[in-house]
Length: 375
Image (cartoon, rainbow, N blue to C red; front, side, top):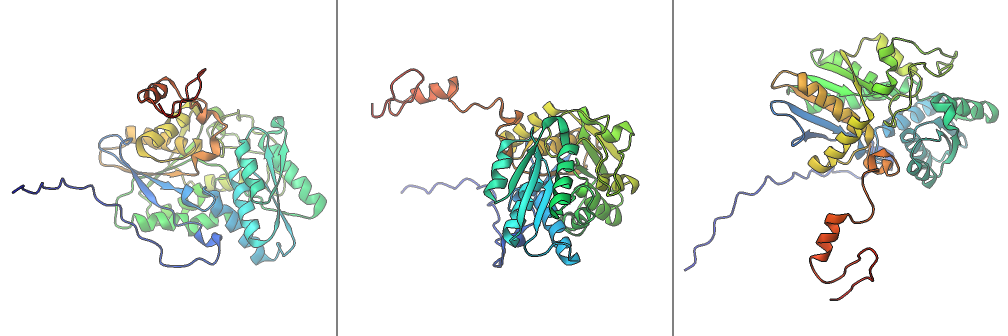
């Protein structure tokens, strides 16, 4: 009689908890994103988590902003059926605004500066938006000025993501409480985030400081564009929009972070004294960390997500043993195919892959050789 082999202990099964509801529209799926533990990349003695905002329906944290701003405008009666919605954006907000407009039935026009990835333009157009590309030399202030000009000329509605209080208010009522709920009764020593508009930073910061004042908030910005570090304020128009480009700005590869001005939403957050430490992040650090998240954790995020995690890792280096750190992953890696994030990743097979292909005789597609089907 053959003795049955004892089964090896299985890895803990992944818990699948489907949401027991049917959604009336895609916008109802925005928010309630998961917080995921970082395992192989986290240093010993520190526990690290990331809030994966690419679980939103258009794969970025900006889905929250777009829903907030448009819903607020509808409630105030400044956005009505048949209107056109306009925004100036590095891409993710434009994608989110285009999605909300598509669902709500508004026309959408997006102004986007030339350097941002072409994937974003195509996604917005796929969602029905018109994309107006502005010259690279005009930077972020140029695309904002173009959006203002179009709205003044045509009577369209401008989202004003950089000045609109509905932006941080939505994070204060959704993103922040989600974090508080997930960490209820649990340790959370540091919250680490970068800034684009400052909406996530201000909204989550307000919620954390009110409920968990001992949690330290670490704000990140590109080393090449240390606007906050400079101590120089942004001159503003009466609307709160920037009057010009910030003198400390220099081009950087962390798309979605730090335009060439300090947004009004971020300036308001500074006045609230919400952050405990400011940490600079280099472009190479952001890119390398995004690639490590993919290869070591299976987490597929963009350059801004890599920058956020790079900042969290810097915090982890100095944090006391046993600390718990949370950071934000704002979007998905697929939005960066034409950017420096993918420069080192080839489309064709490399030498190692060719050797694997040649290790069996059939179905070989080798350079400078006829394709081999059956051996």
